[in-house]
Image 1 (tube, rainbow, N blue to C red):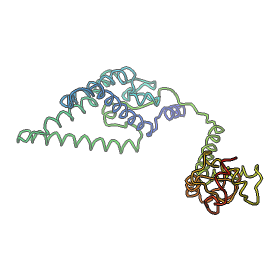
Image 2: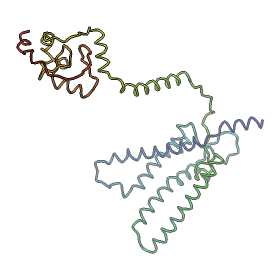
Image 3: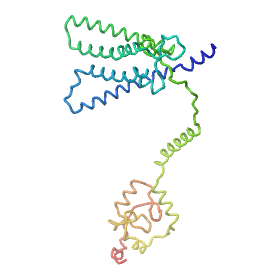
Image 4: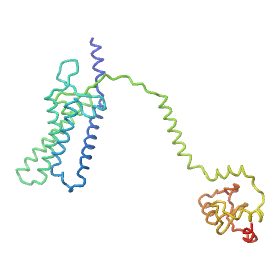
Length: 304
C-alpha cells in the first residue's frame, strides 16, 4: 500500500523545469496581450495610456485570471503543459482544486501586488517632500523584503521542487499533472531520416559554392561536340555572325583560340569572373583574349 502511494506521488510530481516553463509562458502571454492592446491605440495621441497604464494592465490581467485560474484552476502556461493547481492544505489523497478564497487571494497577491508597486512608483517618482520621502523609503523596504523572500523561496524550490513562487507557498497551492503521464513512444526512424537529410543539406550548402558550374557545363558540352585541332580563317568567318555567349552580332569581335567569335565585353567579363573560363560551344580553355585577325574581312562574314 505504501509502495503504491509512493508511486502515485512520484507519478504526479511536476518537474522543476516544467513549472519554470509555465511561468515563462505566462510572462510571454502577458507581453503579447499588452502589445496587441497597445496597437489598438496606435492612431491616438501619444502617451494616452501612460497615466492609466497600471490600471489598464491590472484590468487585463484580471480578465485573464478570471478565465484561467478562477475557472480552470491553471494558468495559460500550465494548461499548455498539462499542469494545474492543487490545494496543498487538503488531506484527501484525491485531487482537490484550490478553494475560492485561495483563488481570490492569488489575484490579490499577483495582480494587486504588481498594480500597487507600479502605481506607488509613479506616485512617488516626482515627489521630493520629506513626508513622501519617508513613505517611499518604507515602500522600498517592503519591496526589498518581498524580493528577498522570493529569492529564498526560489532556492528552496530548487532543492525541494515544490512551490515555484512565494505566492504559491503562502497560499498553499502547488502544481500537479492534470492526467497521469504516459510513456511516449519516439519514432527513431523518422528522427534518423531527418538527421540524415539535414546533414546532407548542410554538406550541399558547403559543396556547391566550390563547384564551377560554368566550367562543368562547358566540359560536358565539349564531350558531345568534337574539338577542332586548328583554327582557320574560314571557320572564324562562318562563326563570326554571332557571339558565342550573347548570340548577338559581335561587338569588337575577339577570339580565345577556337573557331568561335565573342564580343569583347562578353568574353572579357567572363574571363575576369572565372580565370578558368572555357568556350561554351567547344569547351576550349581560354589562354588569351585576342582581337579577330585582320586577315578576315568583315565583308566576308557579311556575305555568308
